[in-house]
Image 1 (cartoon, one colour):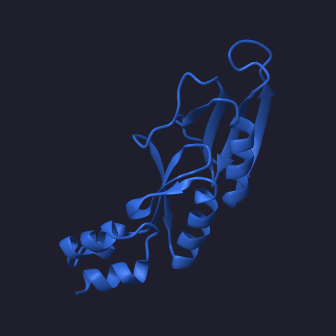
Image 2 (cartoon, rainbow, N blue to C red):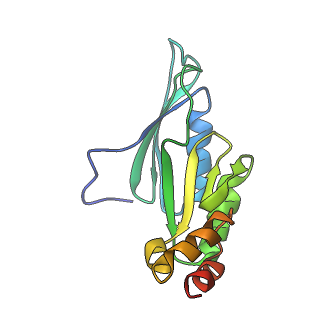
Length: 154
């Protein structure tokens, strides 16, 4: 996959010891994705681990096995905008496997990273009746697009 212009800014993720495993998992979930490079770490707190560069749907990511000093929090999450309920179901099932689900389309994957699996145009779906749509959304874990539309349309 060749991108005409690659962003100068990309996420770089700190793992305790599972950077390569995480990158391989994410590449298996997202189409048009690949491992770019894996470099083994020979010394320091990440010795025996790896520095990984990978792409998900054309977005470049980095990952490092830096040891247990830091861990992920929901203060940073990645949003997956889905065109259909089938896409929501696909990403929800795969990304939440081994992790935990949360309200409003949020989940934490098996590596502790937070994701939001949402319909594309969520604001537009909710626009007719934002309060009713928000109440429906708060009652959902995995988002059900049709139920959300029904709530927004009264």
